[in-house]
Amino acid sequence: MFSLMFAIIRRDVLASLRRGSEWSNPLLFFVMVSTLFPLGIGPDPKQLAVLAPGILWVVALLASMMATDSLFRSDFDDASLEQMLLSGASLYPQVLAKTLAHWLLSGLPLSLLSPLLGVLLQLPSQGMLALLVSLAIGSAVLSFIGAVGAALIVGLRRGGLLLSLIVLPLYIPVLIFGSSAVKAAVDGAAYAPQLAMLGAFLMMALALAPLAIGAALRISVDQ
Amino acid sequence: MSGSHHGFQRDMLYLGHGAGIKAVLSPLENLRWSCALRGITKPDSLIITALAQVGLAGYEHQPCMSLSAGQQRRVNLARLFCCPARLWILDEPFTAIDQAGVAEMEGWLAEFVSRDGMVLLTSHQPLGVELNARVVELGRR
Image (tube, rainbow over all chains, first blue to last red; front, side, top):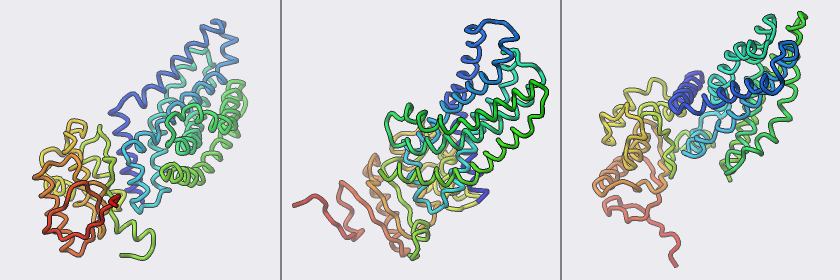
C-alpha cells in the first residue's frame, strides 16, 4: 500500500512541478494579497501587528482554496480518474496520497513562506513559530476539506464559485483555532491547546476525509 | 474470472478514449503509476520491455506532449503488456493508429486470445478475418 501511495505522490508532485503554474499561482496570490493590506490599512506598525494573525490566516485560507480547484481537474480531463476507479486498488490510499501530494505543493510552501510575510505585516517575533506551525497543520486540514469539495465539483464545467460555497463554511473552525493560536503566541500566552485542536482536526480529516473524497469521486465520474 | 467485484477489476484492463496519461510526464513515469495501481512493484524493466513491444523504444524519457497522437495511443497500449489481466476491454483502440499498426495490434489480440485471454472491443473498422471474432453491429436496423 505504501509503494502505491509513494508512486502516486511522486507522480503528482512531478507533474505539478513541471506545470509550474499550479503550485506557484497560489503562492504568488498569498504574497500579493498580503502586501495589499499594509497599503490599504496604512503602515502603522501597532495596528498591523494586531491584525496580522487574522490577515495572514484568511489570505492563506483563500490561497489554499484556490489551489484545491485543480486537485482532480487534470485527472478528470485525461481520464486518469477512470483508471483509478477501475484499477481494483482501494480508493482510500489513492486519494490520501493525492491530497498529501497536494498539500506538499500548496500548504507546505505557504506555511514556510508565512514568517516572511509576518515580518512584512509587523507580526511580533514571538508569534512566528506559532504562525508557521499552525499554518502547516491547518493547511493540511484545509487540503482535506478542499479535496472533498473538489471531488464533488470535478465533473462540472464551471465549479469554481460552487467550490468556495461548499468549502468555506467548513474552513471556519480551522480559521478560528489557527488565528487564535497566533494571537495567543503574540500575547505571550500558551498556544499549545489551539495547536492540539488543529492536530485533532487533522487526525479526524486523515481518517474520514478520504472516504468522503472517494465517494464524491465515484459520483462525479459516474455521471 | 474471479467472482468478486474487486477480483474482476484486478483481472480486467480497460483502455478508453481518454489517454489516461499526463502530457508533462514521460511514458516511463506515466506507466509507473499505472503499474503501481495494479500492485506491481519495481516495474521499470517491465515497462521498458512493454514500450519496446509497442514500438516506442528510445522514447522512455521524452515528455508525452512531444509525442504524436499515435505515439501517445501506443503509450496507453503499452499498459496491456505491463499489467497482467485476463480480460481486455478496449474502446476504439485503433483510433490514431495507422494501417500497419492496426495489423500489428490485431496480432497482439490474437496472441492474447491464444493465451486464454478475452477481448471485448468497439471499432469503426472491420477486424481482420483471421481474428475470428464474434461481431455485434450496433445501430444497424
